[in-house]
Length: 116
Length: 110
Image (cartoon, rainbow over all chains, first blue to last red; front, side, top):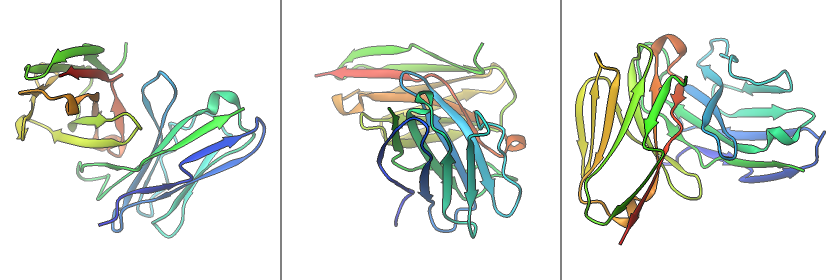
């Protein structure tokens, strides 16, 4: 079956512009996570959606970052007024369930964002 | 100090060697995850375990909850095993989001 998909695969933007990154999780997966991997650094958590619950935004690095998940499926991560330090690979993952159990997470291929 | 510490950071082996990557963590967890990241960036979940030992092909993962330590072993290593191996933990109380180690870059030479 189809895995997690993300678009675009690469995005080059000028400093100060807004960008939107999209994630299509595996059908039926109720939990969706956004992570970031900066060059030469490890992976870090950004935001988590579980069903209709309020998202856990505790990992967002600044108020320029926001995300939404429409209809419990597709998610969009928006970065406003991009800065060079936002350059990273943004990864989306989904799993069957976040709360009440631990399930394997399936990762998308990522979006490589370069801010010039 | 990171919540998840991996060692070694880099590992070079000859084809056929037995490989061990270690992971220590400092908090109570619900599950420990081992992930593989190939050049090009794709991440694949190898194991998720909360106790004991799991085996898949040439890969074995173990965890000692009391000592807060996990190991990933690769038997009869092959050049195609070359990748970054990442240890991560999750907690039900945190929505099962992953907290990652820095990763171990493994290179297996023919």
